[in-house]
Length: 372
Image 1 (cartoon, helix red, strand yellow):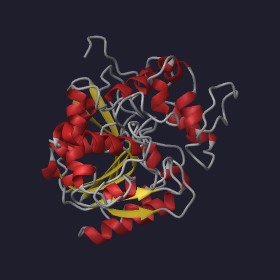
Image 2: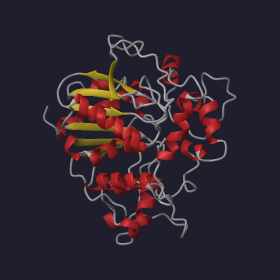
Image 3: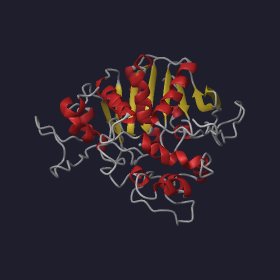
């Protein structure tokens, strides 16, 4: 466990920097599960695969290539479809698996929304496929899901690639930057925004191209390149009803906040310690500019100044943290990561804005660090 709350300030700072776009008897699966021989998506030669991860939960995934597994985990509000143009660049590096998290994509819909639920489903998924020597590629909410899995199953995981995600708890819900959707979900009207409007797909993913423009505006663009209507419909298809969209609200309560002790925070502290200390190869990617720039430093509300390492004066920027330019006692990673900046113009969804460059960077990192 982290140095408990003697280092709370540094953990607060780490949490602020990274952005998450982060059983009942009547649980039901509202998906129309297609035969495994079906193509997964229009225009792509990927076949759908399904596996039961519990009695009432079936997970959809893509499975391409051969060799050691490269497991790609999406975030909110996307699916394995997000990786469609990245996968071809990695087929020389191993077996590429892109999973639909439960309640997303073509996976089952169930009323279980906590981080621990996703980690349990992922654990069953990896166990049943007998995956070992796994390289995790994590984006957005896929970050805490994958890191929490890895922290609990370090023997299964041999590499981590992270971008536009979170690896430590946030200080509090009130301290979230207003530019990220989760801040809106936790404010008045958050459930209605997530479940009764086209906010997540129409606004966040599609920049209001395909709705009637009356949907809530958002200050930030999350995708620079306009997605196609086919892509819009694919992202929209799992969320046809208010009940389907409940996950787009409920996932916000799986985020760790330091002022909310309990099992969720415990999981986040564990994954934060793992991310800092694991010695396996780690890659952190920064966008151009990304949703939050790599050199952004959060403000300490007590002083009004950016958080910094008092021993050397370095600000607690994301870049300094993951490259260990600040000491671990003040939030720096004990084992630094390789850092790469994308040259292509990108915001939150690198997979949409620059799939070729993203794929090339991941492929090079995999080739340099792992034998195939």
